[in-house]
Length: 312
Length: 213
Image (cartoon, chains in turn green, red):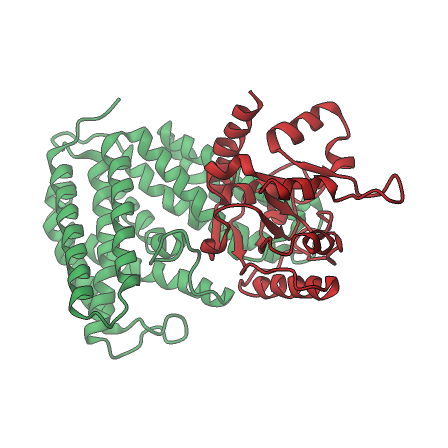
């Protein structure tokens, strides 16, 4: 069953298309204008944006269940990347196996619109299950590290990201037609835009390092410029895609701007601790999945609970 | 029939496992051979090693690609023997001589003469996962007869974590595959083995792998 795509969603997707075409033309023009400089990473980055935007748009715009399946797979990729990066114990293979199995179960609660179980399945049930299974195996060497890193991974890669999927199944509101797809599009678009805006502002005007030991390229100017840009776009897009009031759209812009920054530097801290530059190599020019969804691990649950509290 | 099954196994099932369930990070893919004869020499940690190596090459080469595998293990019962020979397409070799003058590598040599791409694990067995053990001499004795055949070293990490020896449950991990420059036999068995081992060690340090104990 294909849901008829709502005009506001279509318009937003058309906007993304224009932005991608602009980015492609710009990168090609840069390459042409400075033949001596190496722009292969930029070109790769833009190419990958086409793929990511295409897959995401197709999944979210077509059908709710396809979208839930898409986010299930995204969580699987993110958790797999995380578990491949961190130290794990051979003894815990079966515990890791249960954690992978918990992903489709978790997203089943989304499909089933079972909100109460959705919010406790990982933080309560899996929290106990992972510890219990690990204790049954009985290896206490590095137990706390193993159980802690696994729980952190489940919360970040599965639970936090899955809030995007639950946005899709929030009940319909009278008088509002865009629905869940509009909300997902809104928070994902703003989060990615916020990443780019913070980067561009920081690169242009950045002076004062804000997280020198974690991510030395992040600056206060980049953060401020990014948050303001994101808030401005939030105020503009909110009436098209969401039921947000003007005052609330400002609040959401600030939340996504700051939350996105915090999610980004959190994954940066993780990578620095593990001594890797990129979390993987799945997305040419970007790195791994975690490099792309880092900000979303914060903005998705924050935006979701804001919406849930005020509107649903 | 068997050819179709083989095509489905490597074209669909093996690719699904290697690319979706696991996920490969391949470095220097361009160093892989475009045609046979060639020897792909890899470290051995898991049954998944062969599946992964087979998916690195395009499907049109599939009829030419064969893993060299121990006859005593893979031909130990009829069902497994059928699967190993017809679907996986192994070139079976005995690990111990039944007569003092038996040439254990004879089937492999025939295959190379036909122009096949062979997958060879010089460690001889999977051993402890993610640990590189001593190379056995078979590979040197083989290329001594085929000095023109390029030997491509491939280092893989992660498959031993995903499915180590003696485990039945596959746990997904991303897998690193580093392909080395092709090398040729230079006239001395020991020197060749040392060079091969050095290439493999050099590939291994290209990656940084988290502790797994």
